[in-house]
Image (cartoon, rainbow, N blue to C red):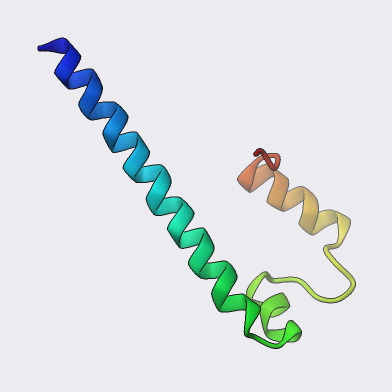
Amino acid sequence: MSDMKLEHVVIKSDDQRTTRKNKKLFAIAREAVQPVEVTLANLRSDRNGLTHAEAAARLALYGPRMR
């Protein structure tokens, strides 16, 4: 019985990763057809990049970029 439960958790985890990956791919595809200024606005940025304060705030909010 416990093996079945563990298997279910793994499947659920894979489904969640697939959903996140699909959302990310959709977002990338959507932004790829937008003008650069629109994409930058959607990212709350501009051609000059983030200020040090904004980068620090995002780091505190989202954590370091991990792969």
